[in-house]
Image (cartoon, rainbow, N blue to C red):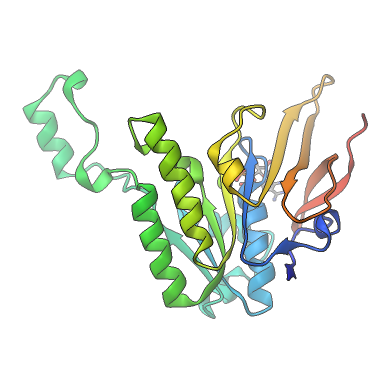
Length: 250
Ligand SMILES: Nc1ncnc2c1ncn2[C@@H]1O[C@H](COP(=O)(O)OP(=O)(O)OP(=O)(O)O)[C@@H](O)[C@H]1O
Ligand SMILES: [Mg+2]
């Protein structure tokens, strides 16, 4: 079954919408619209009665709600009515007692770990367990994880990091939610485990044209089981959020 993305102009590019219960990777440069896309996706579900969960790992939920309410003032009501959940799973940013004590014992900065136990970054495993709890507790059907990049760099060993990210995505598949995983797009030509493991991959681009104007675009890289558009399409932020426009001129 296809479900509406909530992004004006997107569903016609993918045979009517996302396939229910699948995992999609939305990868983009800074400020390219990842959070906006993710929140609109949850609102579209919430308005049709499907509860949505936004898992914030890198930015505070308060900031996201404030910024996104400018496009959609109904977010507050959807939260009150338990149709939208903003869940903060990021590491604590406050310096605590442990940091002060460590500082006294090892005043040499090169010897400090820089991380108190409470500030340890979340790992794929801890995030999954928490997401699983929330999904079961609140009957969440649509999920946004912001971002997979935040739980990527928690292992010293690149091979085990790849494995644990792949495992995280496979486990998410078992939760039965339609999921949009946000990620930072640093090298568009470098393939990552999350791109292979996801059912679909969408890029959001945000770059300077030769004439100095900003170009914003969306491109569907893969969409399993779907005949999809392959053009790089312009996108714009209207008063109501993100919408897709025409293909960029070649
Ligand atoms: N009211 C608005 N009208 C038009 N454009 C806006 C408005 N508010 C924000 N923007 C644009 O949206 C961008 C932020 O969008 P969003 O937060 O969805 O991006 P992001 O990819 O999640 O960013 P980040 O990489 O920081 O997480 C801003 O940098 C700005 O260009
Ligand atoms: Mg964001």
